[in-house]
Length: 136
Image 1 (cartoon, rainbow, N blue to C red):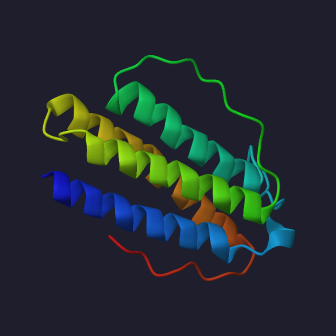
Image 2: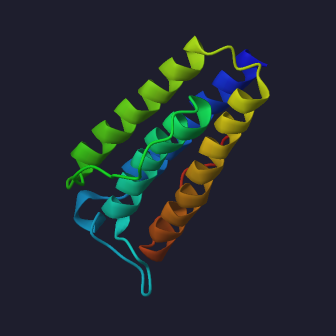
Image 3: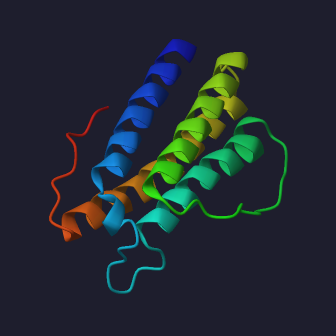
């Protein structure tokens, strides 16, 4: 089970970083009409969400929602996401990933990622970019 979950995480990481990298720097401030966040803000929320869900649901440590200062540039956002994904992978590798709580926490964390990554794909399409091929 653990091997399969880690493989799923690697695919989610690769696809999410590909989506984030596809948006040109000048369009990281793009926000569709009615959206709460621009592209950079959405990705920052996604990254912090991965950290928060990991801590609260995978590790079972209740923490307040206190997002850090937003990363502003494309390279800062990509570096932030890369670090967050590496931390999540390291955490999952250290856990047994056999308990109900760990498996639930893993899926809850990835569900939040999937929700916001889907929004990021829509932002790309709104700007005329064809998103990378979906991998699962």
